[in-house]
Image 1 (cartoon, one colour):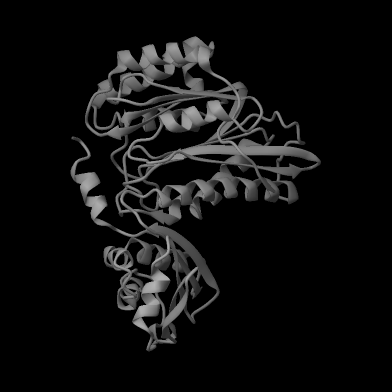
Image 2 (image 1 turned 60 degrees about the vertical axis):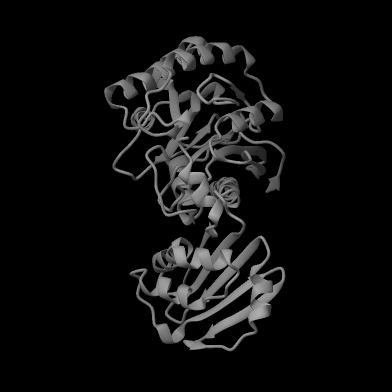
Amino acid sequence: MEIIAGGITAAKGFLAVGGEAGIKPNGKDLAMVVCQVPARVAAVFTTNRVQAAPVMWSRRIVLEGKPVRAVVINSGNANASTGSTGLEHAIAMAETAAQVIGVDAREVLVASTGVIGVPLPIERITKGIVTLFPQLAAGIEAGDSAAQAIRTTDTVSKQAAVRVEVDGHWVTIGGMAKGSGMIHPNMATLLGFITTDAAISKELLERALRSSVADSFHMISVDGDTSTNDTVAVLANGLAQNPEITQVGVAYDRFAAALHAVSLSLAKQIIRDGEGATKLVEVRVAGALSGQAARVLAKSVITSTLVKTALFGEDANWGRVLAALGYSGAEFNPAGVSIRFVSDAGEVRVMDEGEPVWFDEDLARQVLHPAEVLIEVQLADGPGQATAWGCDLSYEYVKINGEYRS
């Protein structure tokens, strides 16, 4: 596998564009991704019971199982909790894109992100789609413009791309994502779009995506809030001309590993850009009863408000980590818990097999000072292991969200 430059347009046959439709007061707010040939699609969506109109539309298309040709995304307005008008607007976005591309509306996915409960300025958006269509292009610059256009409170765009050899053919996978706040396991206010020129069956594409999301987008948290618009979709057009991947084996494993590399990169970029965050925090749990138990334990630590604030204050308050493990709901033996904090500045062990360990507080502050910190939890219950990613919780987070609508 090779990491390469680019994002959503890295794979053969994909075009993109981003521009200003006037949804936000300033800046790019509308993006289009178009495949030059029909592409198979797999997607996962928010688990929130309140689901935005674009999620309803796109979920319906994915369930139909037919190929798609495009994705249209707007930022600045979530088109959520907007009633029947909201669904009409989502369909209008798809229909307008379909008309300019020359395909059926049911070949166009739609996604939105931004403020909830406000009707879309649909006339601006449809006009923007028509205006942007002639500007669709391949290449890094086009992909970057699309990645910029889907941002909300993001301070940077998120992109990743890799290529991998599959059955003697180079397959490319690239993607873009947005997300900074309302990020929590089991999807969040994130949008992720991945494209590939691999030839792979729809069933295995779905399998690879769901497996990857389980250990990437579902294992991140900024603030414990899930949203109404979350969508991660992958489109595969087969232009790499590799023998179609139709069964689990070496070819599938290579593709799945490359897809996961892109998903995980995008997920970690979201955490690095968490609203008000000063640290990327990784929590590794090993020795749990099962993989699922390890996931629950790691998520509990990464989402703990008290753990997050302690990390912001560079306080090695291991009791908060232990408490988060304890209320997670997963079974474990407290007498077998060992905890240590690790970073580029060193490491400090704070608990060993259920017993507190004396440590130098000054050293601990040095260890917790860098921008990336690892919390390592070793249990003595079984083979289960999992990793979750999150960030600290700062004053700036409150400021950003206290002023979000204004």
